[in-house]
Length: 486
Image (tube, rainbow, N blue to C red; front, side, top):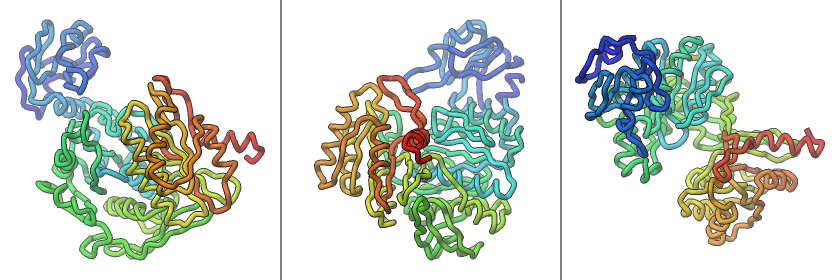
């Protein structure tokens, strides 16, 4: 494709010809190859402008930059923002795949992954093949392609959308994180639907957001880039999130002013099954069961229904889709013999742990047992907080290893104990995670709920910078096999 065609719609200045055939778009100079265009991205740890000449020497015929660069032997194109330029160029390079799909973007602090899977489950029950891009990876059919970020770079987003369209998807759902929106990873096209789930303090400091206001403003960007915005009217931030919106708006929630409403919520419970039932009001008037526990699941399901109704789904599609949805590592039930419930969840900080434990408390378990560790090379305060939350809300905390990275696991556990000691909660320390899981299963009592927190969808454990395979589903299966219970 010609460079000038890739640049269409961008304001730019060029020195050199734009009548160049471009073989690929590259933003990592180490991957530069003959005929490519190299886009200089400014990252937290490196500035691509410094490596422009290196990319040219490897074969790049054009350099896209946002300030002057010293290069010879290539066309230089100056733009205001190279991240935005990468998004625009990528969309053009892959043939504007969003025009061949109905793309839904989800933003919010919590619930994006679960809601995206609910949307997919309903749409696929209606015969609409649906791709996902998010925390768990890129999902097309039965394949899961791992990604580094919740929202990958725009080039990867466009590449995935093209693959989805080519493989017969009629819809795609993207978790549009605040960082992804800020860094233009989902720029270069218009979403059919933008969805706001909720807002709470998170991702503040470091290389993330400078303030709560900036965090909120980044999420608001979605509603200037979609045709229809659907928002949770029960969240007090919904007006700030939609300030300056350019789309039509619809609302959902429990509030009587919401266009799609939920009422009559009640919990559903039996060993191995924790769910929730609620009734719909507004455009739909029927009841649904969701095979994921807690009040929060009502909001996620309501959001999914609010989106899917614009795809012409039926009542049965919604009922079947929500009662069959499974999200890897999000309050995920694992089948075990015996009258207790075993769950795997990604909760890996104090806020998410508090949410899941409070949710599970509502089901009045015989005992609530929480197995967890904490990540190494992260703020120590996070460990104190996690210990305190589990000590306060769980009947038994089983403290073990998570991704210790370059720290000693016993140092991390000692920090967790600081928080535990602020409570009267019982706990036991078992540093080996597999042994800790076995302990929980061997000592389970009738009516217990056991949650293995922290790993969720991850299938590895990072120790001293090395990632070792560890999938908790496989660990449980191995324990059952060893004990002759599988």
